[in-house]
Length: 512
Image (cartoon, rainbow, N blue to C red):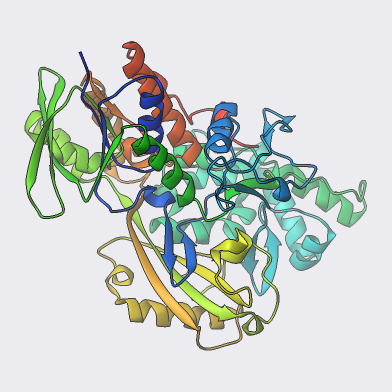
């Protein structure tokens, strides 16, 4: 008997699940996407010939399966292969990525290999991110701060905070209080809108990888005061990454096209509003199409990437009121990108970065992307610099309520204020708003998240995957792995949802 399999959401998790189910022989697969474009927050926005990457998406993974999946959809362009490439899996160099032209014959349907460059902008100085404590960095910090950071780390090591309850505890235990206050606190609180002391330490466990910053500080301090070798030890994340030539959305557009060509179905403008559950099984789902008509479909298997808050509300008839209340109060952070186009002459100094973390006081911008450095093909005119200013807020905040023109004016003012450009006015500007971009690891509802998970896991044919689907700050490769596991459980009939939740929990899935 043919199963009616539905997937809510056409982001990385949804498209991966659809692709894997189809490859395994499943025929009746339908993806319901509320937007009119695939990719979710990994989509690429086009504006007057320029392209915007929402949030910046490096294509790097410790999973061989994910790397092979990506490079099957978009092979690595030979011209972009820069030896030695340092894509690693469990410490082993990757040298076996396929170097072939696109199977479609489209010269743009390829992956580029890009240098990773990201810096912190503080006090009109750039600092490498992650911090590379070489002599240049130490001169910018000064002897006093270098010693202060080293002592702070030593004190934290000798007397760590136990138990580690908050993100503040997490940062202090690994970096020391002075370094935490200097480089982590302001930006993190700008992103989340709440004090680090109110954010779960679990966020740090999933997002801050195994950086030996404290050790690097100690060695740097010894070098400065002459107690040891002047060879400063450093720890950094991967120096290179893969990137689709036309932006991250290209990956999901090509994969979605292949899925549809093989008989799969994607319905756009389909906002799922009702999910019926009977005897611990999803029996049907209903969505409103682009014209507002409600359509109901019989369902045998359901994979959901929609926000858990919306999933529980859509199926609220099945749940106790207490559960609906918890889910309704889950917190999210929303995201605004303001694209600004300048002439290259408007930059007082070259910007070599993929993104810049802004630690300047008095401005609301949190991070600046330089789209030219992700891929030259994101920018129509090579004589221009195409920037993405990232703002973090909630939908009820004054920032979100600003008009597009007000946000464009704010972004241009702040770029001039912090000194990254020398012109008062950009050549062009655009505003992109992304609701529910980041699931919140704070609030009383999040403290009861395991209650939500327990209820959802009891529904035999319901699988929640991806970032919003699991209310977990997954990278896109983690989202893909959760989708792969859900698809495999549907294919084999062997259901163990703990395996899905186990992804992105320990260092097996983390980059070093």
